[in-house]
Image (tube, rainbow, N blue to C red; front, top):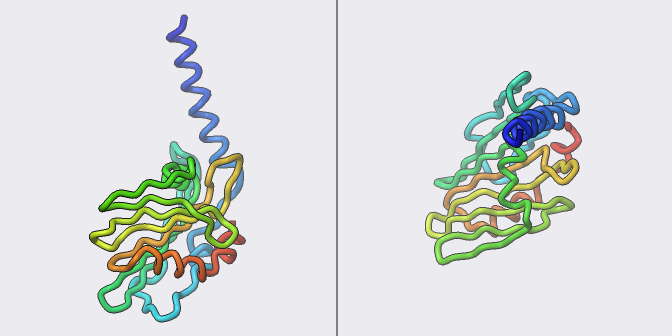
Length: 171
């Protein structure tokens, strides 16, 4: 009897995830791309591209990416929605900070949003995350800036000066 109850709970949980993830029609990735502006002083390395997925086991998802280069330094902007955003934001959900000799994981406010950074000190690379849309305590739209050969403070400053509101308004 307990086993049947657990199975029903798992099935209901699965349908709950599907229902919360497909609560609204998502924009096309090209619409998201149109809101992803250039970064002053950086050259576009790869123009914006992306994917729209519907009817997947995790609900509707939109992904858009655009990359930049400045000498040997590289940036990649990404916007993801749905379960991919929820999963990627999970490590920052608890608002914790961890620092070792080699790594930094830190949450912070960026503009009016909650954000975080995961940084490899030796490689001077990492990712700045910003939750652009939070619904019922879950990040549904996540902006990220992946960076290489840059101090994390410089990467955070780039995000602080980026037009995140334009992306948020697409959703």
